[in-house]
Structure formats: structure tokens, C-alpha cells
Length: 385
Image (cartoon, rainbow, N blue to C red; front, side, top):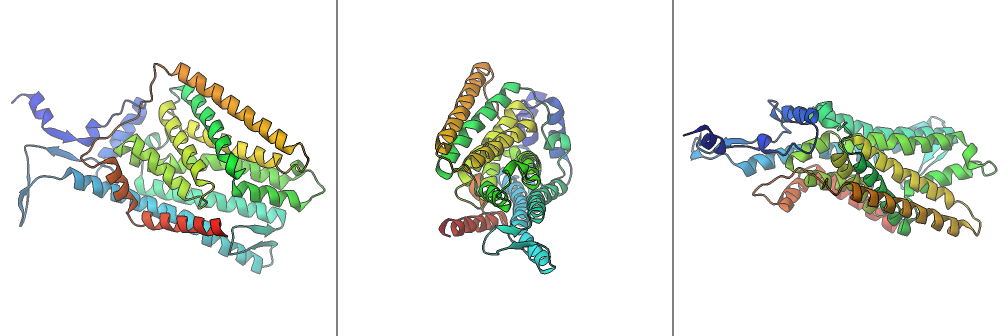
């Protein structure tokens, strides 16, 4: 039997993965992570079709591709579920308990356990908002990094090999931001922040309030960075073993559900898809970060425009939205023209298990399933409140 025939009889999911979508440095690091011994999060099924395994009581049996696939998926989603649970607990329980303790100790900060709104001194509220927004993302991100141990070169794509994809992703973000803002105007978080800071000192221009400027700079610049390190980092790297489309759908759903707000879920889902797709096609996580910066800048600008009580506000708002759509349309046209010979190149994954069967199996994994249900229940409570 020649060597070619022997090679065809060996199945290796690591070797058969399409590594052509990224640069060689990333590919080598990703491949080495998948081949690492005792890595519970790597799907590295390998089978020689000429060999069978003997199991007491069952005789000779073949290794099961499907069982290995499901086991790895369960391990990944089990860990992602705990990371999401940390987000949920920090945002809805630990934070409120901490604020209540500070209130009890005499600090000028208060919270209603029935809602997410905090009130009190401007400095205290600013510090509290920044702290919780940081910890609820940073702690789950560090947890995933610690558990999955994905090398930095494979966890964070850092080679901008297609700049036109950056333009296309930002342009798509412009259009999605406008579409999402039509029914809801702007997100609940932005509305609450603007309302609070705008009423603290009503006789002073909002732009003179240092605390507001500090919070908005943090919200627009820092949050997109750490959030994309979470959603487009270790979790994304582990998920793309089963195809880029699978990784995009799962991360987008997870990010949307964690908002715990039905009005924000569609926009966050679409923006996360654009972020992940832009990162894959451009080769850099900087694209994902840029998409989220644009979205938050748009929301903030729209919120500030709508604080104007004059008759000209609707006209100014509509002109602003039209300009944003125009910029996005021109940018997408440029992207399509420059990428005619560069089609989207996503890594595909084939298995006897269908795409939907993998989604269903993964979504049932505990505690991922429980966290998703709790988030939807919170969203329902907010919707009927």
C-alpha cells in the first residue's frame, strides 16, 4: 500500500481545518493550541480507519467522531456558561449589594433593587458605573483566558491584511446603528447616563461636567476594547474549530442575550456579527473594536441631540441620521468595489451532525442554558415594567 493510500485512511480534524483565512503566525499558534496534550477545549479527533478500539463488554468498536465532537462542545459551552454567569451575578446582584453597603456606610450613592438605576453624588455614581461595567466584562474574560489557555497570537487576531474590510465593517455599523435607533431612539444605558448627568447640575452645560465626560469617554473607548477581547478572544477561538459561521452566531447570540433588554438585543446581535465577520475578513481584532466604538459614538450623539427641547430637534436628528446612512452606504459601495476579487473567506466545517444540531446541543449545556433563560426572563420583566 503506498503512502497516498495510507494518508487517505487517516482522519484528522486539526489537519483538515481550513487555515487559509488568517496569517501563518496565527495559524501555527492556533494549530499548536489544538494539538496540546490535556487540552479539554480542543477538538482534535484523529482516527485511522483501519484500526478499531477494544472495549470490555462491547468488543471492537470504532472511535466516534460525533461523540468526540459533542464532548468538546459541551466542555466549551460549560465554561462559557460560567463566564456568562459571572457577568449576570456581578451586574444584577454583587453590584447592587456593594452599592447598598456603601450607602449603609454613609456614602452618597443609592440603588433600587427593583431596577438598575443608581443615584446619588455625581462622583460616586461615575465611579460605580465605571467599576461595574469593567468588572462584569473583565472578570469573565480573564476566567476564559485562564481556563482555555489560548495563546495570545491565536486568541487575538492582530494582522490587518485587508484594510478594505475595516472600511466595510465600519460602514455596515453606521447603517445598522441608524436602523436600530429608529424604534428605540437609543439604548437604555445611554438614556439613563445622559439623563442623570444632565440633571445633576441643570444650570451648567453638559459638556462642562467632568464626570459625564469621564464616563462617556470610558463608555465609548474602553468598553468596546474589553468587550471585544471577551467576545472575540478565547471563546471565539475555541468556537471556530467548528466553523467560523458557528462561532459568529454563538458569540452574537451570547452578547445579545447578556444585554437582558429586548430593545437592545437585535442591534447587539447584528453588531456582534459585523464585528466578528470584520475581524475574520480583515485579520485584526481592531476591526471588531472599531465597529463597537462607532456604534457607541452614534448612540451617544443621538442621545445628546434628543436632550434638546427646541422645535428644531427632530429636524437636526433626522439630518444627522441621514448623513450617517449616506456615509455608511458610500463606505459599503467602496468595500464591494475593492473586494470584488476578494470574496469573504470563512473557514468551513463539515460533519454528519448538522449545523442546527450543534447549536441545539450546545445551547442545552449547563450552565449556558440556565444563564440564557435567566437573561430572557430579566428582559421580559423589563419589557412589562
